Length: 572
Ligand code: ADP
Image: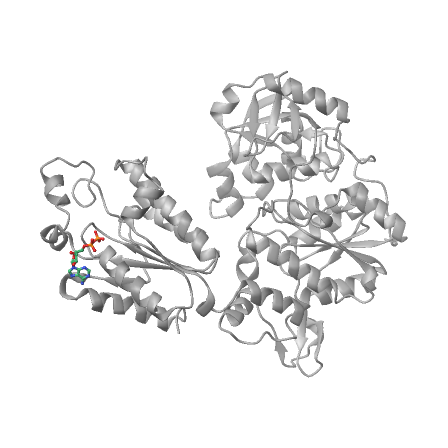
């Protein structure tokens, strides 16, 4: 295929669903009497891409016939190529309030209304068919399938949308563009051929080299087009990633060869079909070439990416439609760093010479261990941004989360650890003591199962905020339920350390101690649902530290915790 020039969008016309100001005003008034459908972040991403024409020629969320055709044939009912349904799912109770012919307000979680939708179709989700069609498997081990079976609503609603305004986005607004804005920019710059580079990761040297080779091969400019879920204030990781892109952009010479733009798209991890959708989106943004990586849009990067899709399947599928799309599909080259050349070369040209490679996880571990970032892997400016966000453990925030039966010794140990850490100084320490939390954060809560669980989640939330801001949070709730503890761990580990201390003192010892007389009240039935008596305590599966305080002093127990912190580098 000869080098394509920037061409028409998919289906011929670039869609723009944003209505005039007067229509928006009218819709705002009408919306007072409309049912609302609250969209999740991924649904808002889809709405934005419909609104701005990135999903051209779609003019709304798909109706049943299009959805079925797309699943079965990868085509819309008019025959146009389309690989993945763009459908709006709702929960059963919401679906029960909706009917065909109705106009509903589409809102975000804060109640802001970016659009309305005229419902043309409501139908139950056939999860099996959807999973097979989109993901090529119904295996729940596939994260996309799992999400679909467990969080997708029971019904789809389809119909055209009218958009009042794009969903609110706060972060890096100057890097967000509609396809029309990008097309106008390309025209202004005189760019006739543009390679789009899709990424969900930080751009390190291997990706940079990849883009340079693709630009040279295609004799084209570059649209660096990372996908960005919704950015909220404090969403550290995404902000870091974008700062890294900005740093990497400085490395292109001349810098006028590239444009960086953030794509508000939520990944589905549907492999080959999703690669094709990515290509269509980039075509709508005016690109002429699209790079498809091995395991593109697969569920996991690295070795396990082959679990669901052949590594080359995404490229093969996208490339087989290149002619129809009038888009050149480029294969990501397998580049390796050859030490003696001091350069990246295609793997097949390495000829047994010493090569170097590193995963992003290994890189992050390195910088957290305080080691220097190797320049062959990433640019120093990018490394500097990453180092700011992934500091060594000795300056990270962390949460010490003591869990165990009442009377096991949690508060006593937590209090002692708190005092030792404050004596050392360096980081602010907050003891989220049970009584203080109950008084200041949860005063309206009682001691029912549900209320105790809400209380623990609140403690987890505050601890995660403290951890994010590089402080030390110490908590000592009973926290009897594994699911709640796991969720708190997940939230906190994105910001720093989570050290679960299972204070595993046996029930008999706790009951004998009975420091607050609670066990005797529970035994006589004065307290209901008491952990260990008539409500279960689910033991932690892999706590960082386990302490049975039966035969140790509180000081010895606290010392065990401090030794763990020292061993793992959280304190020096
Ligand atoms: P929890 O917070 O787990 O309900 P507390 O710390 O309030 O438990 O009470 C535990 C009781 O056990 C305290 O009276 C404490 O003095 C006593 N105790 C005895 N040995 C230990 C130990 N090694 N660690 C912690 N507490 C201990």
